[in-house]
Image (cartoon, rainbow, N blue to C red; front, side, top):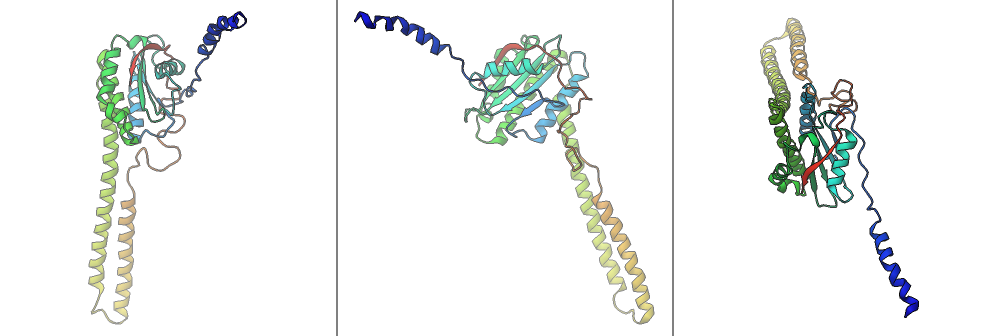
Length: 286
């Protein structure tokens, strides 16, 4: 019995060594260049991307320069709170002096659909853990949905609610309202252009029918053929002008062309888009 007693003495040491093994951490996404989001799941739609970038761009022109970063990942590798805090620090979200950055992280985590709001030190008094929890709970059904569209809606909603807290803190005009209005105006402009084109084409068809009826019947002989030939040229000239103008219209930010509205190099005047915030420790998750 005494021979095996030394195993009992070593047992606590083995237990401590195994317990001390670090959990494999998920890779932190590289700091996005020119945009304020990382979408590893292609989950965000154009409206959400535009809202995130436009809001941060508006804030970049202020003295306080707060920021909200958004990360959409497959896995947080375990503790999403630590993962979000690492992103907040590594990306340098927020003004370097004020540490007024916030990061919203959504992790699929094998269908668990976890989300965490991580706040910089300069935001903890205004966006408390309790407030962050309330924001997440208000969008919980969409966060936990199996529908990517609903999750996208949740991310956009959480972003707006956090932005409202920042706007209130610094007494800003509602930046998210301006961003939404800009997106809606661009969409309306494209719709109006399409409608105008359809009207012009329809009008051209009516004109063509009238001309064809006017030159039809009763025009015999060579003179009739000459008049018809002249009218044909007029007809095709009118149709060409109408159809050409119907196709033209204002180009929206998502129409054609090389380089999309959210491609590399973004709309921040050549900067990286990040202010160098040093991170924080507060926040809440679901």
